[in-house]
Image 1 (cartoon, protein in one colour):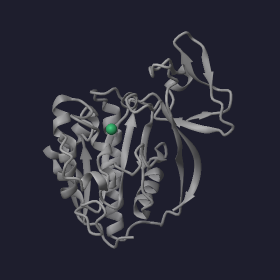
Image 2 (cartoon, helix red, strand yellow):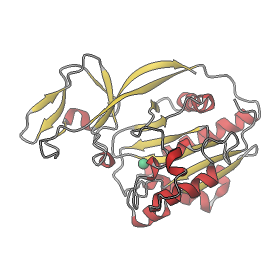
Image 3 (cartoon, protein in one colour):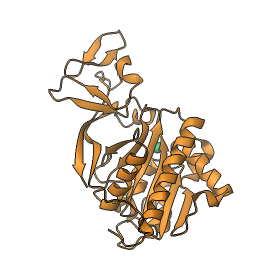
Image 4 (tube, helix red, strand yellow):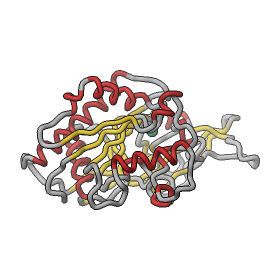
Length: 296
Ligand SMILES: [Zn+2]
């Protein structure tokens, strides 16, 4: 692992209609001392100002699927987010560098799905897993979801430096601030900053060797008719749940006519990101994960 952490980034507004991150960054701009620590620099920014201004997920395309090496190195891509990604990559990365401008990134998101407090991690990087395990120890109700994302190569904002992850908190409707989740997200941020202060000053009490994680197995789409349109909804049993255990025979969708459709996999899996509004366009009704304890 790295010897010393010099710079930690907090990014919000990657999706312009996820207001928790937008307003936490606003709060830090007004009072930077809140995220200041003695042993490292904290850098924070709004990543997608165009989307924030119009309170939409994005302007032209999803910024949080734009950080592939191919895209960053392709000068002919000129959508708003493609150009923005190159600018952010210069500030925070460059991606793949052994010596990026920040040592660690936390990218703030909210979800319309009942994910509670979650860390979504898409890297094997040991430091990132140490941080996640520390946060889980401090905030036991938090869950860790291991997911490479829905694109062929990891393309999240959090993939720019070697170390980092995404914070997902919900359920929160798009374009809405929820005070409880705002403060809970801030608590996760403060816990991560505390980790690095302890790390840099040799005051971490232990090395974390194991952590419980939900590991992504597959994403499933809504049932669709021949015209491609959705013809069934997420079953009400799942709607108000995060990390919902599915066993063969459990109802999972219900058609517009009220007919229940059942989970048919022999393996028990946990459903999460259930009925996330932003995933309708991606053809994802939910992610299915298995739960296991992994060695760090
Ligand atoms: Zn988001």
